[in-house]
Image (cartoon, rainbow, N blue to C red; front, side, top):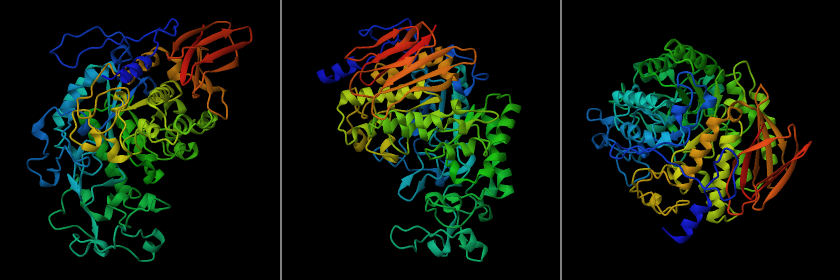
Length: 604
């Protein structure tokens, strides 16, 4: 390991003494081993087994890990080529190509549960795992979003029994399993003669243009596409009703604006007509059967804003009710609504009856603050919209926080590609601070797989879906990973990585302090330049924590109103500069925070 990397890693350790921290405090995270070949070592941090039983645990008590199974660990090479009996779900395996299957599977994920357990993870969200059309065009369905069969696991990932084994093993560790589900579309099978010829196998549109979207008003006036299913593909989808074109909108490709964003084919995928009552009933039936068979703990729902809101208002409560009848009292669903405004996001948690959504607003605020160097008032603006989420059964505390994902890219990539030309010291500090915000601001934290190993990527989509197992993709392996000399050509399950260490300690504190999970947010201080953002989280019984972040490259201090004479430092992030300070008088609380650091104080 280079001297520079050693220095960066040493300086990125955090203080975890819960009785107060000195500036030179170091971190030691003792963890269990991945395999039985090594003797287990005592785990010193709180993990899933130290939390409420998964059947009784609220979403606000969870720490999520979002993983793409194909890119995680290959537990069974026999399934690398997919189905041995169904050609449509076979092939597409090429570990050297970023758009093909790489061999990761359900068995591999189960084998790595100890790694996730020691990270403090209590819930695992899997990208879609149902049987896909293996190839569409020149790329494969490794990601899972091209579903053909809603009753079987994709054979590249394993079998239904493998999934049941994973869920049992996770539950034995008190870890929840969430499925990623899709109701907006199915795999691209239905074609239009106007675009694909009478046999459905041609491309009659010029260049890279799509099949033009036909607005509903023109459809009502008699203009429409003529559907065709290529010979031999008439019965590919399961359940069988999904093969009938009458259950799809068939209005051409979405151009992402107006009604096309709801009724158009999403990147050519067959857009289900969720306005049809029979489709609503059919989709409810599909997913209630999945709940009954596998007993997952919840669903993340894909492309929510591309489905009419009325569908969700029926679908979501029906699934929650069914899950409860199966003994899953805390079954929880959150949707992907790719929008950063609370007015749009909250439509689906209120009018749409969905329990929660991914908080793209939080992600945007973190990026504006720590990548673009906007003022910390971006957070006060974010939290000012929290009242939009308040309804009879939820509030902003149930929103799902994240810093980056498989579509937009990784937070490390945003930092590395920034016009501010951050050096690695700054990238480490800003990345850790972003994740601390993800844990300690209101909402539920989600780690994107590989972020805890310093993964970067070259952009969004396929460029942000690296392998945790040794990779053969050249464009992945040339990445300069953060805070390590490792590359993605190696196995990347390093529990000594500074980010893994930091996230494990964040989870430890998160699990310890109810106010960090359930406390109502109040903004105490923000500014229109990089610097201090201070907040409090207060429980109904008055228990309170104060969290202070510094987004500036220089140390900062702030004076706040004090509602107690005694505050206890329960976390102060270690930095090379040192400099944490807390002074309390009768009426004021003066806090000094080092550059790109944070601290958590508890009222006692």
